[in-house]
Structures are given as C-alpha cells and as structure tokens.
Image 1 (cartoon, rainbow, N blue to C red):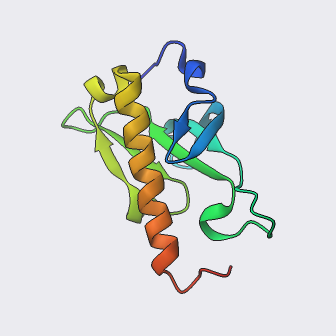
Image 2 (cartoon, helix red, strand yellow):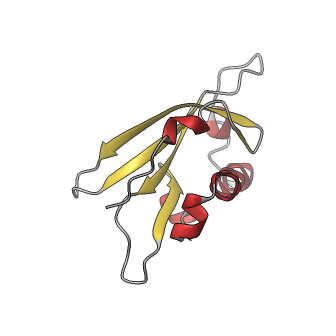
Length: 118
C-alpha cells in the first residue's frame, strides 16, 4: 500500500487555480484506501454548482498489476481517471500537475454537460 510521507506539505498548493485546503485518507465501500485532496468551492457570488462546488481528488493507495495508481475526481471517476506511477507520486510538482489535469478534465466535463445548472 502506498504511503506518502509528509503528504500534508501539499496543503495550500495550487492545482488548476484551486488551492488544496485539506488532505485526508478514506476507505471506500469496496475496501480501497485512498488519499483525498480537498478543494473548497469557488466563490463567485453565486451558489456553487457543477465544477464550482467543493471537489475531492482521490489517489487510490493500491497499485494495479502494472504498478500504477488511480487518480480521479470523486463523482466523475469514469471521465477524469488517470493512472500515475511511483515516480510521479514521489515528485511533488509532478503530482500537483496530475491533480491539475484531473481538475481540468472535470471542468471540461461540466462545461459540456447538460447538468451545468445543477
């Protein structure tokens, strides 16, 4: 299982224009453990909806058969999931870039979704 020492050092780092405000761990219903990078809602004077809501990017802590880990936005896993390797995870800047990529994919999905106003 993946363990990242000093994972809290990414707090306040910016990914795709949003700051990580909290990092936690979770276990889902199929007993997969993940690191959770949490982003506050974007306050633009309106009720946050779609991409502007608070978001969570999950990094599953168990490698697949190829030694890669899954990184995705909770709620849009099928659209945003990418695989990252140990090198990317060990390099803080590379990890931030991959999290940014996931957020960018999520924003694109919301912009082109018929659920924009929900």
